[in-house]
Length: 442
Image (cartoon, rainbow, N blue to C red; front, side, top):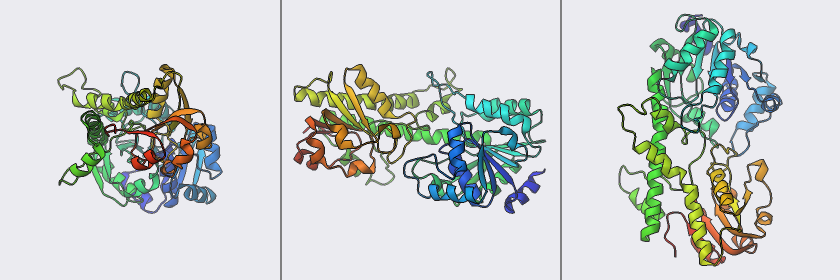
């Protein structure tokens, strides 16, 4: 099938689609495409996810507006089904890959999931199919990894027997469907004709700009975008620590800085998590390390942001000492384990690092999170017998806490706020020893 024929099938909603990986990216993408009238097969190796999807139940918890109703609707109409069988890809005209692309302990890309997908997909790849990688990858990965692996596993040739492109996802938990529709996309194709065909496809559900380009540019744009965010957050976190040291308030400083035109100081906080910002800066610099490009800023930003959970421990330790309490032996209530407010996504959660540090120092962490099944429960019951609270995530539930009721269970009542969720005056009125990141001690 030619690209022009594929464009016709896309416009008529006759193109058969597949999405490999039904996680935070792939599941809403598959649902959205099915909702636009396409026949979609979702490939997922986790049996529990396949079973839930085929029952019309979302395996993603947390607040995801529209997703629960959409998945129920498209499964009921038969436009979406899930499977673990790669042979069901043999008739698919477009295959989208949305699998994790983490980095290892040395910050090098670990593409095992991507390799596995290519090895299983290649032998059943339809001639004339368009393969689109939505996962975030290091610059040069399409050329160095995807093309040779896919040609070898499929025994067919790119731009002759199949087509390939890279359109990196731009979604965030809590806004998955909205981001799919309203975020602009960089559409990279291995040829200009491939990129233009991809634009035709993405126009079926994206309302924002679609910018056709080549694959290396698409790889660079996505990794640069998240490295930029990481650097900006690190700047805010470093300014927060300066404010603590000199007697300032970073939240007021940020407000006034951002009144100046063209300024956008980011929010400081208790740590950076998730699958993107924690690893995409390393993907950006991968391949030039040890070469002619001196890498200073991006690794330094990563170090600053990785240090913030330990900074929370430092603030806690200092506050406890003022009350003649030792961190060793203390029970500490951790509010929030997901990396993002009102989400169940715990990937690279700063709270995980925090918990490890507390245990190493002899403290006993007690964890609460309304969206993470392992840590749900009555927050007031969990507070009983604790000596301090560390607020790590700005879940909506924590903005509505009964501070007096919570304080009755905590002695000596230390509260460290890593997200500026709690009103300082209300905290003091309730009898807390209150500390906030970026704010000098009262």
